[in-house]
Amino acid sequence: MVSLMVRQPSYRKSFIESAMKTARLYGFHGLDLFWLWPNTESDMKNMGALLDELRAAVKLESRNSGKAPLILTMAVHYVPTLYSGELYTRHAALYDPLSNVSTDFGIREWISKGFPASKLVLGLPYHGYAWTLVNPNHNGIGAPASGIAMTADGSMSYKYIKWFLRSYGATSMYNATYVVNYVTIGTTWIGFDDVQAIRAKISYAKEKKLLGYNVFQVSNDDNWALSQAAQDDDKDHHKKQELLVKILVPIAVLILVAGSIMCCYSQSRVLKAIGTRNLGKISLHEVGSKSSGVENFNSNAPNLRVFSFAEIKEATNNFSFENKLGEGGFGPVYKVLSVPGNERKEEKADGSKHLKGSECKTLSYVRL
Image (cartoon, rainbow, N blue to C red):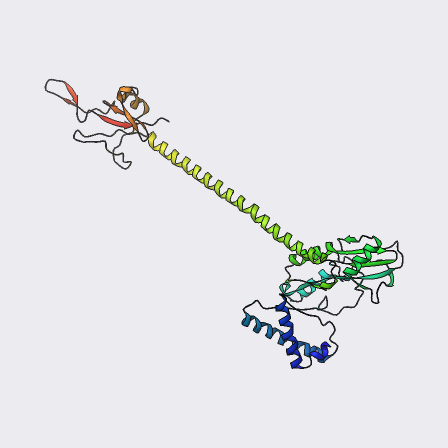
């Protein structure tokens, strides 16, 4: 059927238009081309033409509609080279420690050949395969089987498998090494993907940064169990991201506030230390007899004299209350009538001596 469709350009055009219309109608993310076995050279050539025309049509439709372009996917062999081997007893195993027949090996092979991970879509089978065991007591993964069971080709939909398990009251086993589920009922052994395997594969696709995942086929699901498991894993991933943000943001704010407080505290200590050192060197300023106020201190003024604590104590009469003028910005302010060693005396005609200049000098004193 597909071979006949791709032969004629008009058939291909009708198929492409119908496929895009259906995808938009039901809100699908894209289209998946499922033609596993092109048989002839002509089939391969015509399939290439279909892919080229489909890509061009998708781009044009996106420009005209203003919507994101539909994603185009196509089922391919699990490795980019031909391989023959037994693929059914663990037909969808994520890992296989005993061989290269696994999903992980296939993903890594495609990437190693230059295919970008961002364009790979992980397939999730909603079906499994049934086998007849040689020995029911030897029923682990890889156990010898005499042939297929249950159906003509051994395949069973997930819905059919779950019904079969309920009918016999059986419970499947999950193997985390291979990432598969399996169940044994008598001599029948069934391998498939249940909820645990689906969740593990969704996490794997995110870890490898693949474009996404698709299923084959949705109608095989049992009461949406597998689809819900995939959706829940995606929600859990977003919840973990939101929780991480909720935790990290307050921590960052606390660190910022604590850092600001420490910075301000350190700066205040430095300023206090500088102020203490400067005020420890207290100088007396001469005040002219005609001056109406006290001169400002100026650290750059020449010939300033530094007085010791003992000199200041003597000059203020041991910081007496009578000499206290009031409170200044840096502490009590005292008046000084005489500073030892700072008097400039004059001889008078009567032989008496008196101080020259102002009779009042001031200083600022800070208690340490």
